Image (tube, rainbow, N blue to C red; front, side, top):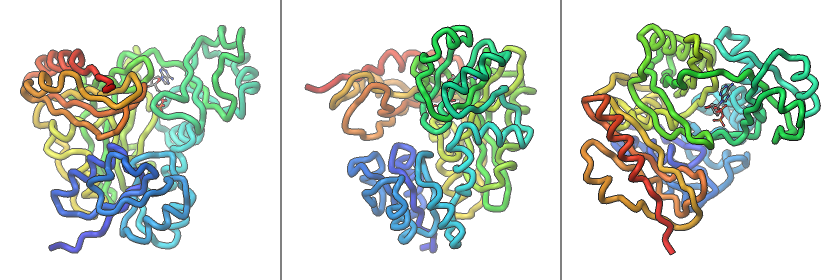
Amino acid sequence: MHNNPTIGIIGGGQLGKMFIENASKLAVAIHILDKDACCPAHGIAKKHLVGSITDADAIQKLADISDVITWEIEHIQVDKLIELQAQGKTIIPNPNVLKTIQDKGKQKLFYQQNNIPTAPFFVVANRIEAIEKLTVSNFKKVAIKSCTGGYDGKGVFISDVASILENPNSIPFDDALMIEEFVACKKELAVLVARDQHGNNAVYPAIEMEFTESNLVSFLISPADINPEIEKQAQQIAIQCADAFNSAGLFAVEFFLSQQDELWVNEIAPRPHNSAHHTIEGFYASQYEQLLRVLLNKPLASTEMIQPCAMVNIVGDKTGKYQLKYMEELMQLKGVYIHLYGKEESKPNRKLGHVTIVNADRNEVIRLAEKVRTLLEIEILQ
Ligand code: ADP
């Protein structure tokens, strides 16, 4: 048996669960920290420390039993991680990356300082200052984002500037805000980069995404239907981002592709990401395999696609215990892989699972993904 380091993950959600599922192939022990005794990764973690991901003492306890620490969610106690790193603990990615990313204002300033293309923006302390600055700005339409409050589109407000000025209270947040010019997108793309502990990068092909009204990814497809020049450029920018962070880890870089074919970095997730779930079945190596290798200080794997693939999220709409109404119909489709995260209850907009669709023919992937979407009804159990 190899003497593998023990990995500790902060968070035990679906990303942690899928990471552990893959890591079990190499018999690597993984501990998790999550306050929910029934979190998705609960049943397959070696040890589950039940505690808060924002509690420094709980993180210390995870560090005490793990050789390497990583996270699968961003809203965690990052200062504790910075302290542990200073004491010599291996934390991947570098927690300073997370410190930058946790604040959307800091994140945008980082892009600006590193010449990473991103939509024009400014940062303000509150709603009053937002109105002052919007009055004199030349933005016509904006995305206003709470610097520290949001995830999955929950801290994002999109509106015409004229209507905001008419009704300032329409801005739903009053904390520090990052105000960004609205980008009329042709497409939203994402590129995943894995960076090892020696600074080597492995970059995946770009995928394109579609979103639900509440800003959750509803459907993504690989490869993206974009010209090869844009693909190359997106991959180069993604590598530029990983280089700028100068940290090992996984980086999911989300882009807007403007009507004029400009690529703007929207945001980066320094962890496994929803936009790369399809790599489990569609690629020679999944995002989880790459992260595992990075954490174990092993060579990166190939990022080549096996065949075109799509991913549809299974998202709750009602509250209660639930089942997939058309499970059997879904199971009859070739190249369709159902992932359920094991969350006890459905809630509106809660991610309960996803389905990956693979086929040699990209058009057939789209046809099947549409069919899958019609079959993803969630039935609440009485
Ligand atoms: P979150 O971090 O909560 O996922 P994002 O900043 O990614 O929030 O925004 C969620 C979604 O809102 C984006 O994927 C996009 O569809 C839309 N959006 C955000 N900012 C802009 C923008 N500047 N222009 C156009 N659409 C935007």
